[in-house]
Structures are given as structure tokens and as C-alpha cells.
Amino acid sequence: MSILRGMISPHPPIIVPEVGGEEAKKISHTDESLQALTAVVKDLAPEVVIVSTPHGTVFRDAVAITAVPRLNGNLAQFGAGHVDFDFANDPELADEIIRTAVKNGISAVALDHDLAEHYGASVRLDHGITVPLYFLKQAGVSFSLVPVSIGFLPLEELYQFGICIRDAVDKLGRRAVFLASGDLSHRLTPDAPAGFNPRGKEFDTALVELLKKGDVEGIIRMDDDLVE
Figure (cartoon, rainbow, N blue to C red):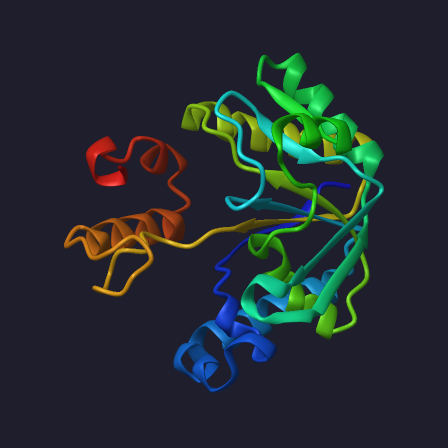
């Protein structure tokens, strides 16, 4: 068995009704897309969902996989603490991904309670994970979870890390879905999180077109100045 499907999801907290309320209507297309993603995952009935997030504990020199038995989080920072999440980890798969990565020369670490305490970090689920999984939870989809935080490694190494994830899933025979959680430039309007930049739209358009074509090399070789 291999990865059943790879997907990309944004994670705007206002898409969650308990957070956004009426504001959620402004991004109804995103809601429709997440509902469609949820329907696909529900039909696939995976044993495990592997989610990569940019909002977890990010190391400069390694990719981190949260390695605690129970994975918990909520949306308290967005005023909805009663919206909570609880998933079982898949420690065997997490260990196999790390082992495969290290064997291939890619730095990967297990983020447990001790390591998190050492770095003043957290093992709780962040909104990069909880927002897209909110819809799966609402739909009653059951699965274990492996959370992966991005690392500031060369893009070629991150691509190879993705291959290591696939190989680990293959070796253990898991029915798995991979979900890449991430937004685009954040720079399209004056009130955007990172402020307005006229090249924000250029970046967003270029990346979306490369993703549509599945052009991995094109993504890796995007203009460094534009990406920065």
C-alpha cells in the first residue's frame, strides 16, 4: 500500500464557523474546496493522515515530526477554545519516516516532550493542522495522525524528504493520505498579515500554475528573490 492521495490545503482560521461566524462567508470558495477535499478523504478511508504544517516547531537544520502518543490542540488563540482536537499518533510510522530520512542524509528529529521542553517549544497541534482537520472531524472521518513541521532545509532536500515519507508508508503498508497545509504569499492587500507587496500576486500565480502542472523542478527553481 502506498500514499492514496496527496493534497494541499489552506488554513485560514475564519473558515471555521466557531471562529469566523459571518466572516466565513467571504471565503465561501475555500469552504467549498475544503468540503470537497473532506469528501475525497472520507471515501479513501485512510488509516493515517500525514500533515505538514508551517506553524509547528520549525528548526533551521531539520524536519521535526511530533512524536507523542496523543496529539491535542484547540482554537483558543482564535477565540474558540471549545473547538478541540484529539488524535492518536502513529509512532511506528513516525519512527520509520525519521529512520528513512536519516538513512538518506536528511536531518529529521522526533519532537517529544523532552525536546520540546529543551527548546521552549510545544507539541500541541497548531492551526495549520487543526483548521483543515476540523472538516474531517465534522464529517466523522477516523484516522491516526502524523504531524510534520517544515524545516528550513534546501528545497531539494525537502522534496527528498517527501520521497522518504512515501517509502516509509510503502514499507509499513499503511493506507495513508498526505496533506500539505500552507497558504500563499500573504501579501495581496494592505491589511495582509505580512503587508502589501506588488509581487505577491506574481508569486501566487506562478506557484499555482506550477502546482497545476506538477512541475516539481519548476517549484524548486523558482526565483529566489521572488520567493523571499
